[in-house]
Image 1: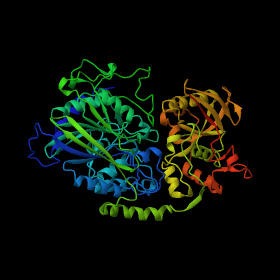
Image 2: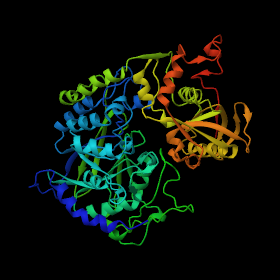
Image 3: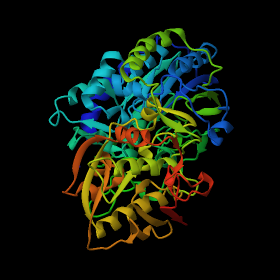
Image 4: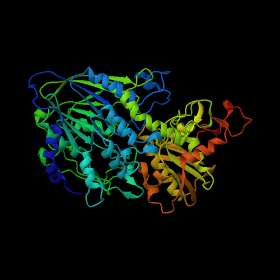
Length: 599
């Protein structure tokens, strides 16, 4: 750990000056006036920049995404909504909370170029740097945003070390800790924060990218203190997730607004959270002198162990005392994901405080026209993508939607299918297989299953990795999966094939473990397959990272899925073709209780 405060301060004044010049000067005097500001907010687009088919979930329907109005999403339609709302708004900004990349085949081909160009044409002002921006490596981030980005890219909690990697200096140029906008006299300090719980996405193979993450609370408090006296509102634009956002809202002194992402949820209405700091975060240090502690971390999907010291204790997180004039409520908003909505947040600001707000979600469906300029940018990529991937090729047919999450929180239709496709792939054929649930990104809709759907379901270029585990290590693996699942409502964070167990979410232990019908033996060795992401410690599976027997086969999981489904006329289906589906207890894409949940 080291103190980063002095190196940060040296660049702050220049950054503040640059950011303040983004809008014309000669601002009006707004003292004592009610000033209106409109913020358009998006997050977690995940490469869904073209309209796509989707069955709206119940919660999405409650938010206004109606059934039968697909295809949904797309940046050209998003741009239409944003431009329409800004035209009628007066003072306005469009801010995005990150994870623009990864989730549709257009990213697999063009590496983010289409996404960055489209969002630039649509008029985005600033974006927080998400973990999936790094999915094709750091050089790709630099290439896409420096070549095609026309908006500010923000992350205050990533330190790019000059002596670690040659591209670090370039990152310091294109990724800013904050920016200040002067919107017709109303000054906004926008602090960006990237994701720390998914730092495994910031690794290129086994090589660290030279990014040193900074402790969250101290970093946000430091920049809030620095900006507070110079701006009317301090806004945090982040990709940290709802849980961390709520902690920040309670504990950060002087923060007006958090615009968050990462968990793919919508807060409608937004939360208004009182400043009520947790005792362990308060220190007697003066506001500007709190050390910004840097911590090592790894893991994806909110690793519960992230940032802890080796002895199990947390690093020091003092945030200083809060001046009475800086105490305030913090407004917290999340806008959903996958370009399904544009959120509009209307604020009334008086004397450096938000005095009222209104919130509205605009669904992006077939009733929304496309912005012509943005559509023109996308058309060339669409044409080349269709010619390259032949996305309309049909693999098989689904007679009903194949869901990625199970009704009981255990195994699911699609989860079972993916794990089996990995296990039974030629040259794999291990005793069992485990894959992470959140690596399966969407459901398969009823009807023809095309290559395009497979890129949406399995967008990551993950490959199958095999390894040997002892029975004790299998127990450790499933215990960790159970604890992780318990923190998410006892919804299983893994999907499996060839193994069955009970997740006891009360005790955090895996029970009644059987491998191919036989009880687990502690001293026996087992062949297992998983994906390369988990094999290198993703999602906090450190027991797999330290395993020395792993072999990356190089076989893409998407390819294994396609080959597996080709031989099945329709899904779901019984293993025994003579058994009716309604009597089926085991089969292809059939939940069979291999993961039982116990509350």
